[in-house]
Amino acid sequence: MLKGKTAIITGAGRGIGRAIALQFAGHGARVVLNYRKSISQIEELLQVIKDSGGEAIAIKADVSIEEEAKLLIKEAVKEFGKLDILVNNAGINKDNLLIRMSEEEFDQVININLKGTFFCMKHAAQVMLRQRFGKIINISSVIGITGNIGQSNYAASKAGVIGMTKSVARELASRGITVNAVAPGFIRTDMTETLPDKVKEASMAAIPLGRFGDSSEVAGAVSFLASDMANYITGQVLQVDGGMIM
Image (cartoon, rainbow, N blue to C red):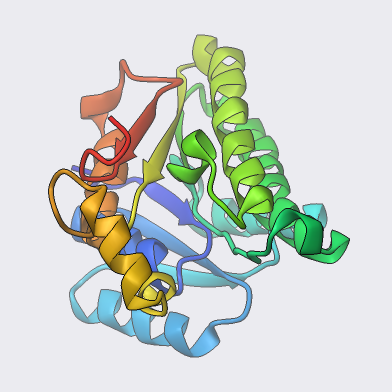
């Protein structure tokens, strides 16, 4: 499905990013694994991909810093000669109630989740415009659509990703570049495992399918949008949430 394609996945060390990397490699893509801190997780993931016959490299970069995001794109193209797919997955949360939230907590989330996506798209687009082809998939969240108590910074960043996705999709469409977003709901990750049982139960009750999603199910949506099957889809937000906010 992605044979011969080159793909960058930011924040690929764990959770959804890891699942996307494994699916992409399984579909034949040459994968560039971006990480900021999780070197041991990236090394393990590299080995898993290589052991299964896939092709992957790892590049350390803090995408919230424009020069590092620019270098990430440059190094990927230098290694593989082109860039077909960019998945902006890197993200953090620093939850707090509005009146208690510090400027630092707000800025850290905006810088990585929103500015990081902007920087990577900006520099990837320069490559894709020359190629007259490319696919960009941004990982947003249902929280960017509904909002959530204690997550005003995270909701702002993920809503911003949706608005930016639609704007950039309009800018790049004439050159054959598609830009879409995937908005996961409650997905089983390290983050959701630490939630109190009461929160998990309340969340489950709001999901028509009656369960949390799996990272591989988000990766499936991303793989579809990255494939030729989605060539006529752009500017869309695909919710992978078990029907939570239908």
